[in-house]
Amino acid sequence: MKIENQTTIFYIILAVMLGYASFLLKNNLFAAALTVAGFFVGAFVLENFFVEQKRDYKWYFSNGGWIYFFVWFIVWIVFYNL
Image (cartoon, rainbow, N blue to C red):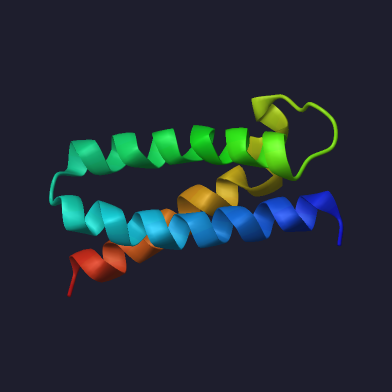
């Protein structure tokens, strides 16, 4: 599987987990901070365990970062409205 697809799948799974965790926080500011921190932690994990060569954050943002933020927002809104 291509590294771009692995990155996207990793960020989708991370977004679902952090979307639910953001709902449990009950504080919108902490939820947003958790989301941004999750993106950078995810980039760190991907860089050290999955990606063979060093990439900058623009690469991670374009290969899964947008999807990460959209999926997180959708999951957070779904749990927020329950």
